[in-house]
Image (tube, rainbow over all chains, first blue to last red):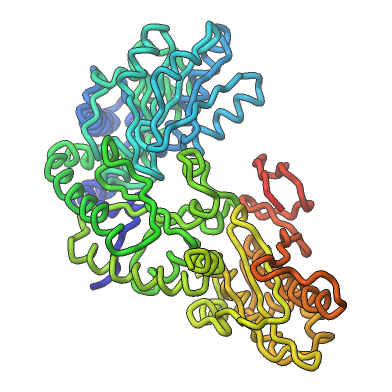
Length: 393
Length: 171
């Protein structure tokens, strides 16, 4: 069967059309888009075309509202630090959630060290933020709210539109980390109402190392990278035109094929959600059934640890991701899983299964069989499972 | 592949897995916070480890360490077994990645706990009841490394100066 990739969130394959566009761009030897001669102008045209494609994907009012970055992480850093610093004279309070990606958490930690005050909101068992909590946390010093659109560990989608109505009312900048949403589910910044939105190209089958930050016209924000005047003076540095062209093509395809992709992914996701509890006992599903990403299923396998599950599945040519401390190299359980109410032990046994267009029903069947064997083997070794069986009598 | 061939062998084919019903020495170390729990069962006859079994909740390293440890310890006298160190286990496994060395600490600690448990029983000290094993939160014996930037750090430190990361380890 070859390798079954159920870890698309870590790396998506690049689509053939995108590869073609990038290879053509490499061969074309485009000049610097900032140069004023005709060679530069040709490059600038290519850059603008890619920009327009990305703007169309998220229904930005103007392509000028798209700033290309080196990926989602840079976009997040830019959004959080840039808006906080630009508005520091207005206030120093920032609101976020307990389940953000490390790019947001670390950026905020850095700001906290510089005197900003951070309020991090709790989530419910589904991983959802209550917009009312956002409203209640707002003070006259609040300058930024940063809440992710979808979570990369549970798949939960947040009520962004509701939160945006609240931030708009108070004229507070609203950033959403949408790295796992843009190009996967329909995203319309006019509907969402956000001021800043981070995204990455690999999520929609474009190259890694390229991403973007949507900056709504009129948003006060400092650049992260300073030097030249590229990207409307918002992000200095000669553009990674090859990568950006790839991202533009990927954006076009994502827009064109969104419905077909959603159908395919949701079918496989539903199969996993229904068959996993039937195949494996003592399993907790962390992905909510409503308002969640179509391509992510997270499960906590009780009494066993994630890295050992991942290694055994790897032996069977199946690639999955785990959130165990050992595997993520962090020495502690995932803050996201703890926030939704998983115990430390259960958090350690969590698998995050992420689907792509190359997955098939047969592959899911094979995965379920393999997982069943792996779980049995590891539970036979586990002192925690031993205790559970003894207690059950 | 971050793990040596020997580690993968012991992970895929762990030796001495199980429980000894009439064990006369039992030791359990670790906790879910750090993601590893090891239980060692000993059957000691004439001051020698006649049989040894393990159960482990943990990563590839943890399982491999438990397996290798029981292989090394089986048949040894108590005196000999007391000299088995984490380093011995790690070396027998052809080394472990730096950030997994704490897993190897659990192995040797669990064995020593089990031996102590046996000796406490022999000395007439309160032998823990069935199901009431001595639980010991493992202590870092050897060196500690920052899991993010690999720089050596002091035990118990909660912030790495080198890469400015919070550690918040439960050690």
